[in-house]
Length: 428
Image 1 (cartoon, rainbow, N blue to C red):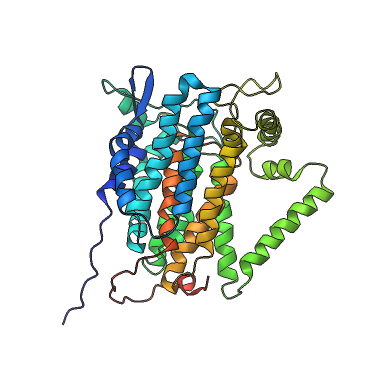
Image 2 (cartoon, one colour):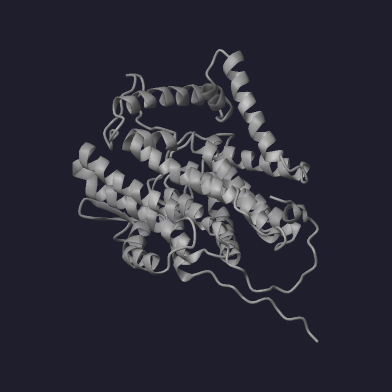
């Protein structure tokens, strides 16, 4: 008698449409308001998403959802005080891009199979983008962006002109900046290699990992590649200490001890030392250190509502207004209350998932998601994200919150054990 096949699980069309909108850099204008394909899609589905959320609320994690909603409300209040002429456009964009993607994840990614399909769909997008990325790396011409710009009635993101690195052009491929493409690829590092353990063979997982790492490398962004390196380090740490119950506590203690040691020994602050190792050049490290110091000056000068979209105070020699630190931008733009709401939602979700009691078969997925966001947390100290990649990162964040109250999966037929099974067997 033939062995029964596993039930076919398909990802929700809502999630597929969302990921497609993230990956297609289409833009157009309605009057003075800039719209993107992603914003258009989210505007069409946002009210139905809210209604569906109210009718079908997740079993756990509603406090995290509420904190993000309060942050969006505070953002509108802060904009009304600092940038009233832009409140409608930017407050609306913040609501759609943050809450839209997040709610799609909360509503349609609720099981291990859903999460596995999200990983697979993201890997397919990255893999399909690689020929375009390689062409752009060699020629400096982004094919998809150029093709969209050639279409009537729409345009795409601006082609970023940045000096080459390592003899290659920096690749933006699908996004507004090469850093964003690198960050997008970096999210696959732990999600593919760890999160699919027990489902995919080792060669397939290694191939998926390679695709994500290669895409991240082609961006030639030290900030984005930092996420890859941190995730690989955490994966190796787990592999080499598979049975030690306190391995993560020991790693945290080592990190705190290293911070204190650097603070005592070095003539630079630990923040400046971190930037020096998280960037390709000493110049970039020095520049990010200045950005952080002057960014904090702006925070303390405008602690309640922030500065909104206004230009920030900085030395005269800093001609560029770019602020390469996502967490710092939150505090500068929305004030300390806005930063506190966002940080509380983020840290609450991360730590609650990390310590949630889970059956052994779900621990690899939990570990993958936590490692992914551990890497992103540090990377976001060195880069800023906006529009599509901003929405995607917090879609992915919401896509892991089902682990707070996992729904039992239908029994799957037994398969031969993969050649590499240490992750599924490691206790949390």
